[in-house]
Image (cartoon, rainbow, N blue to C red; front, side):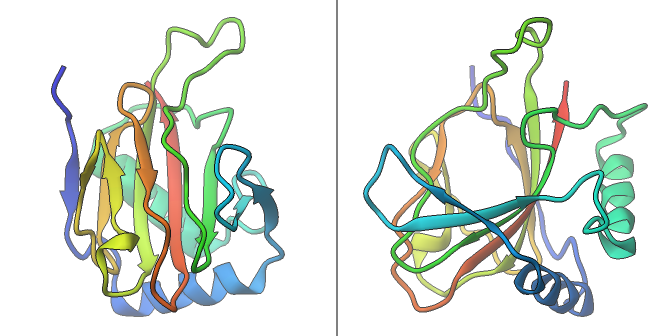
Length: 170
């Protein structure tokens, strides 16, 4: 099956990007030691259902639901809405998002990601099925994360990679 990837240029405004960046850096993120790879750490925080899903996050969530034309969207129960911060030297290992919990195994995880911060080199690009995609600050990308292997390279630049992720069960 071919990759169904949609890229949305300038999905958020410059001011929204700065507010999301401040929001990401203001919260205490969980540290996830990547067990598959010895390359640094990545930090993430699940925010749906918490006070961290502020008015801007909720506004963007509604924009996503409208853009994807989702009726009664079901938020991914495993990952939900995340803020992901990967520092230089960190990465995300190759994986798919598979539901193992009984009753959910027939669902797919539709991920809608927004690039809030990144450096200029290609190590910041999302890699899906072995192909890197040049996603810029403020851009978003959406794909079936259950069907397609995705990862990042080791972040080589000095900036962190900050992504807001919204997951839906489809």
